[in-house]
Length: 372
Image (cartoon, rainbow, N blue to C red):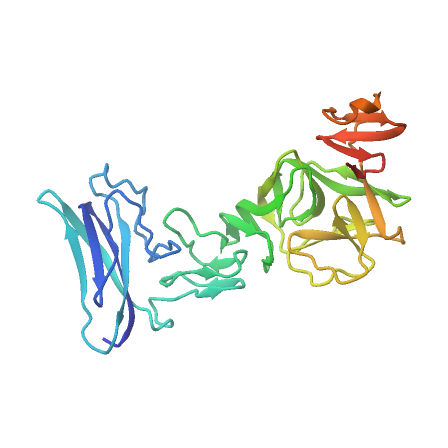
């Protein structure tokens, strides 16, 4: 056999203390009858065959279920290659091996083995008759892996695996990780990991419709004298950007399902929230970005991370735009200044001759500014 790296994979079942595979003098880990076994570090189950993989509960099923075991070894020079399977057992134990595969890992072009390698962008791979034998390593966790057959892991289908227009589990991460897709598709389940502080403001542009998130999503309604009024929107749509205000606790993720939009969608005329799935090195000058609870005009280089948005505002309302919300309480409660410090319920108050709006424990001026 030629020198190089080999991977030995086999299906096994049985009632044994353990079975250890070996190739080219390298021992794999023991498979134990009551443990789930991931056969490489990202848990990709190989190969793609018609063998049935049921729930892993070997202790109770009499050894009738199959699972994959594997080991990778290096043959230093051309010569004989030895493969072994060692069973630790007593007289009442037994084991079966089937579908034994030997892969020559040093040749990525052979008909039986292939590596998706290290991924930083979307990839399409025909795995109808091939096997993914090397670890799938993603430097961008938001990439889409399109395959002809679903890639399974030891616990569930591979995240972001697009098969026939559907991703079973779309998982996106905040940071400097871009997201892109060649066309719209469907996600059975979707999640965007994004942190927003309690009662904090953020711009959100998710490629899927968000169905679960504590807080309120807003769209621009009117701009008057440097104050932009927003109206709440109960059902955030896929690909559309929103101003978001978190509830009273830290938000760590947004979840949803359904249609996934390959490109962001503008919200219409007037004040436009322009969402992005990718890093923007420089927001156009004279447009506005969110900072705290106000919008500020861009007059220098301002970058923007994915899944956020900036604002295009007609006319020239000034360097700063204050925010106002249509769902602020309307009743005015006259109270003494001394009572103003702590414990106010949501409502509109007249404090020291000025209107103060309290919502979710945060105080705002009449034009929407956060007050200390």
